[in-house]
Image (cartoon, rainbow, N blue to C red; front, top):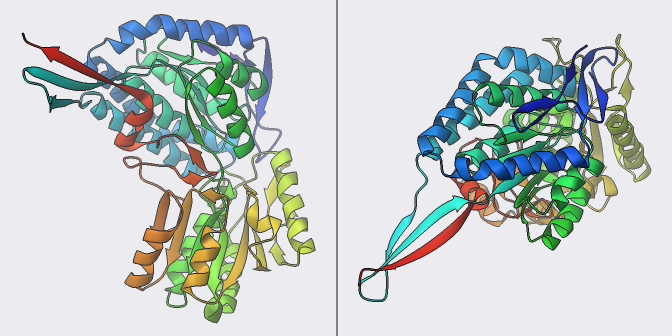
Length: 478
């Protein structure tokens, strides 16, 4: 099998070693062999990005728009092919994987349009005969560190705005899922990205990630991953005065009021808690249900979860694919055992034995959970959800906000008053009404509060806040 190499300064280069990428649906399925970089290669990539920066930053906006548009078109044309690779390496269902590639295409095409719409301001000065112009310029060389759970969409929503606004990029994808990012790098290269403008360095966080964060020629770091890693990264980046953007964890609440349409509520909670195998930072991991409907809701959701087929990501009948890795599965199973020991009634959650050797787990519901249990406080990042009782709206809102996280929050209700109150007072960066907490549009801001996010928002026009710096210029005509 051919080695998939790193892209540095427009050339494909072998790393210091390589890693096998195997499917969590079937560990005998070898997706590919991928190079791993070392600190020296990271340095080469960063210096290539630094060398390419003046020309790319000074290029016509049309040049940048055309490149991003070509990438978006290629992604859309190849979404079935790329989606199949994504499903094999990450484990999400084929339909979800194809949809993710389609989303990446939309992101690139959105920022193709934004490249020619970078706006500034002409401001009247308080001094006579003085003009003031406020413009946006690229921040410089940007290091991108992306996660395994959305291995092509999240790289896309970081790479596209970075290039749109004239920055150059060094991207480190998750070590678990290099294939999708590598295919995206191939498309960028084939679409005509100039040498050094986009660089891909695959490898571990301990080596490649650290080298990228600590490199003095990197001006900004955008990271998506765990809270612990993100906080440590921010401290190290701060010592180099780097601009930092962090998207981290979530323990997202979905409130189900007594007046909710239960069909809508069950569907929203099933999707939010268990689709993508619960491996989404926006997953609904705390279901806060008003007492009068708690038992009926729990019964209906448990039945819906049990009826959802768990299986191979490539099987069209599969609703929930495998967990991404043996390590993640073992962690999930430990939380299932913990929920029982904490006093919750556990429904499901056991490991499933399939025909193929993979990492399969039945969806888990923790009934009669309380908000002070560890399983209700810590991010599990698997197909597990706590069902917590609430007396009324006020208690439900208080429970929803009682968390160190603040990414997404939802409510199912037929009351405009409840919906309006919740939208205003939920301590989260995104709020959903009668919709799953997971699932967002690409043209509007994405991000959270408290321990979930740090720095400016991702996606949409708000991405400019991170990927540009503002310059104020004064002119006196004499």
